[in-house]
Amino acid sequence: MNSMIFKLVAESTLQTIEMVFWSTVFSLIMGLPLGVLLHVTDKEDQGGIIPKPVLNEILSRIVNILRSFPFLILMIVLMPVARFILGTTIGTRASVVSLSIAAAPFVARVIETSLKEVDPGVIQAAKAMGSTNWQIIVKVMLPEALPSLVSGVTLTIINLIGYSAMAGTIGGGGLGDLAIRYGYQRFRSDVMLAAVIVIIVLVEVVQFVGNKLSSRLLAKR
Image 1 (tube, one colour):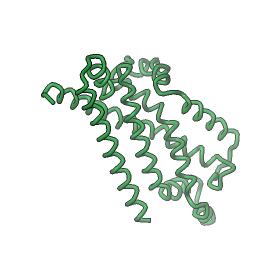
Image 2 (cartoon, helix red, strand yellow):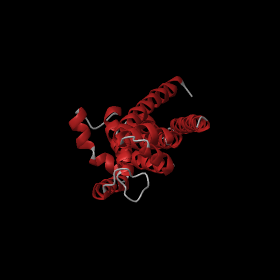
Image 3 (cartoon, helix red, strand yellow):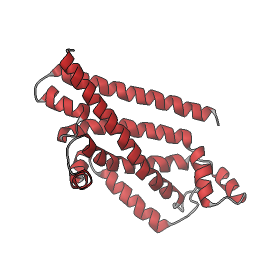
Image 4 (cartoon, helix red, strand yellow):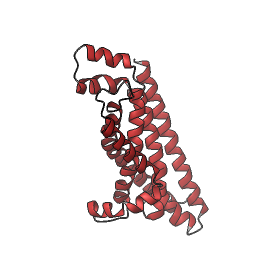
């Protein structure tokens, strides 16, 4: 790999890491409260401490609709949103907007599923001790679900790495953009291979770290 290719791959890797990092942060900011709300308002679930069937159904439908959109189509649909917020529809920063919104419904379902795994007996014990709903959510449910939440966030980050590669097809920057512009359009198979290898390494590192962290949290219970 010559110096030019190394420089291109290094720059694109940093762009991908930046996209994935901020997309993870913003998708968690949006998805975490939504996932908690989906769980606590579910009257069918024993952890549903604030049963609100109508609200739960509305939120669930919205999440399902957003999750059903293919990512590339969703990115195109969200271009006006990116332009409104940032004044542009291309580049790393613009991609963060679409990636965050696309990942938020997935995060919400991951959070909801993790909270379902909390032992209902623990919640009932907290209620019996006079804990408020907020205290039950923050001090009981989320800490109890933390190992599962870490696994879910790990899966989210891996999905976002894949999404960021697809974002490159419409000028999103990062390794996907590099693979398209240099690997595909200029017939540089070495650049394409380098981009794929880096993506695989990123996924493996995230999965390894996520598994280790989740295992440690589980062992401390």
